[in-house]
Length: 255
Image (cartoon, rainbow, N blue to C red; front, top):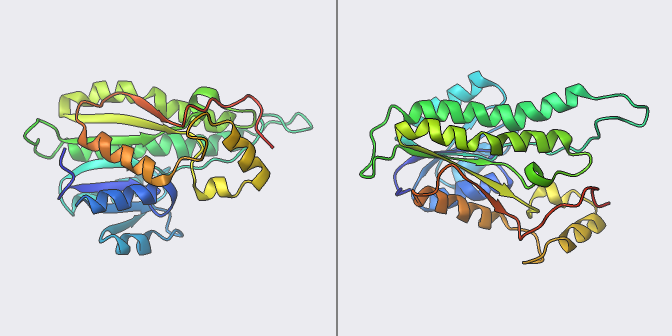
């Protein structure tokens, strides 16, 4: 798929992996609509890349519907990238044996339900546009995590939410194939983002030591490059791609 001239929507586009992706797509000629919380710097980022900002909480389906509609005003919506998410850490039981169901629900609502909302409304918009020369209407790229496969202690909610994103990739790709819409998921490992930088320096060093090669953090531009390749390579579909330097997380979190 040729990125130039198409409308692209990137959630979580005000920072981190989403920001790098929005910039990459804009550089390739896409008209990018950034979706992020109203309190984010989404408006400033959108202005800097010649795009648009649609404030929304991805867990709110009505807000997502409005954001997708806004993106369709700037051209045929052919690219949707889900980067919005949260990654708090909490055990199922606290020291007194109490459970935290509301914590689990919040993480799943944002990471899994949010991804579903954007995917569903994005696919509905793509269904209405004309196909290109290759009978393609669009592509949806979702973000899981290596935690979907080897989540650590304290990441039950996060792993479950990202595991759900991975699990729905193939059935979504099979369903949306009839409309010429592809679905691919990226599962990043340890990435050089603000989220990682909040960890203590010792924790950062120990986590990096677990990465076989390259023995460093992944970089946001590498994630963005993979997303762009997925968009342009029309034979990639229904798959989750690990972007992780071959890391396999140990059971216990490094402290």
